[in-house]
Image 1 (cartoon, rainbow, N blue to C red):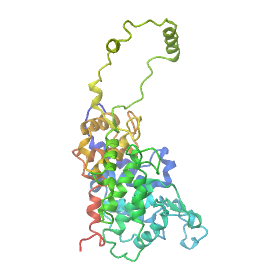
Image 2: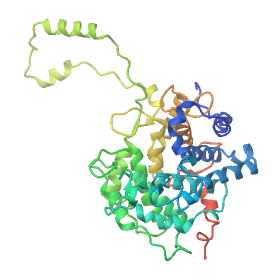
Image 3: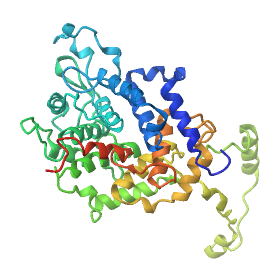
Image 4: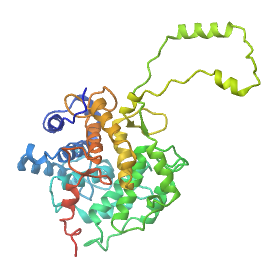
Length: 420
């Protein structure tokens, strides 16, 4: 888009189109995670304040019914309905590994149900909370699902830690009312594992000793924030503004904002460059007069071109050092700073210009980088990034839950969340 205007109507139409028509074929490979797509679409319409105006109560109930159809008989949710055997009596210990619940789908399903206004009365709450500790490893990390023989499968990375903390937050609540006898996860080990993933430069990596990454940093801080909200833990060191961990992370995050938006075009082809190199090396070296005078040598150096002030107008975020700006990292970084209470440290106008001028698409939604077509993932994360910097026309957002505030409003109506 050529002007810095948030086209709310087009974004609403984009998400509505994704909800009610068939998606492009490029989404086929993600069919096993259809709950992820449903979350981004429903949550996107909610952020736009349009969910209840562009869908009917009957339609919203049908979405709720589909989500419950993804619920696993033993607790938790599948990513989609394609793994269901059909007849429940065919489930046994030998084949149950081929139709498992998984941690991300469970967290996303619960969030989507709450955004839709469901009371979670049909959620197998006890079964889900009994299943969750089985996915925690001795080092405190979480896997994705239980595989053959009940073995924990999936990576050890922080995404599953965040989703596990989120499930616990939504279903156990601040006091664990009604499930006091259900074994809890080892919160202390989870906190220790998360903090062990902090790298030397302040950010957090996939696992300990890995390169810092903005998306995984968000997952780490989101997990700790949700654990802290329920009073399950004292404030972790990395969430304490006075700590070295906090300050180191803060410095790493704010340096993720960048004006490097696109790859530089080559100014000359290789042949011309090689010819110039040969010509320059064929010239005899000339002695510099008064070579011993360092001040004169410095004075003879060419002036650097001043930074183009116009280029500072657009400032997105990258996820790692020396990478280009990307729409999704605008949220992973800003969301983390939101958890830390430090969003004012970013160049918010620069972020807004980047999203609205460079990656907002004419049909609605946001692309990954400059000039790319929109996709559901980047469309939602671009939207919630703007919500965090108070874009007019968007609902307020909860950075730790990656949703609008309506989720929390509906959550507090549940029996195990109500004030006693």
